[in-house]
Amino acid sequence: MSLLTPYVASRTTEHPVRESELTIEFALNGPRIAYRSPRPTDRDHHGNLWVRMQESTGGRVRYECMHVQRQRACMEGMLCQICGGPADRNEQGWLFLDWRRPDSPPSWPEKSITSMPPLCNEHARVSVRQCPFLRTADHAVLRVRKPQLYGVSGAVYQLTDTGWRTFDNDVLAPYGKPRLPGMLASRVHRELRGVTVVGLP
Ligand SMILES: [Zn+2]
Image 1 (spheres, protein in one colour):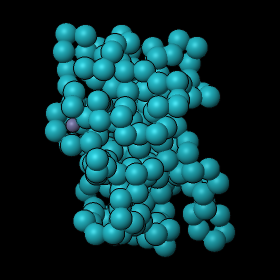
Image 2 (cartoon, helix red, strand yellow; image 1 turned 180 degrees about the vertical axis):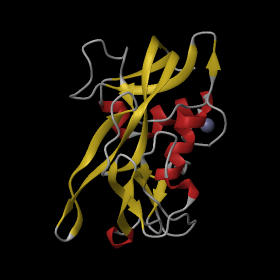
Image 3 (cartoon, rainbow, N blue to C red; image 1 turned 180 degrees about the horizontal axis):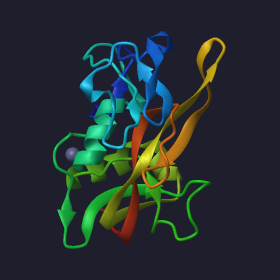
């Protein structure tokens, strides 16, 4: 059986932006990270600056690393992470796979905060069969009534004498909190609310 190429997976030829492309912008409420050559699509509605990542069909698939813009498209548009088509939804809600992480809430899977996009029926079955991690982890197939957009995560840069430097590459920034001026976002997260654990469809 050949492995599917997940729509969200990045490729070895798709490189993220270089730090030399970043600059400081003096916005109304203070300095913030920006690109030297700004584009209208650089920021989301909340003002977070997003990693620019090349799109390529060459190279090898990096199964362990999601493409920034494709992850965002899947999460915001509720698209299947494997095929990029609509994720499945029934009267119990949207179809997700989730697993318990060290920072999961005690109520897990209720209120789990995840960056893994939803799935269609077919690809939920394929994912459980093909992903070695899912077979060993404490995972669950879920129907989620309210997968609410929660926030972004990414590297937080601080301004130093020699330019922007990052000291933490994985900071979660909820939309409900003040925006971090040094955030370079690379993931959208949803909070899973109204969760029912179900069998594989
Ligand atoms: Zn699919």
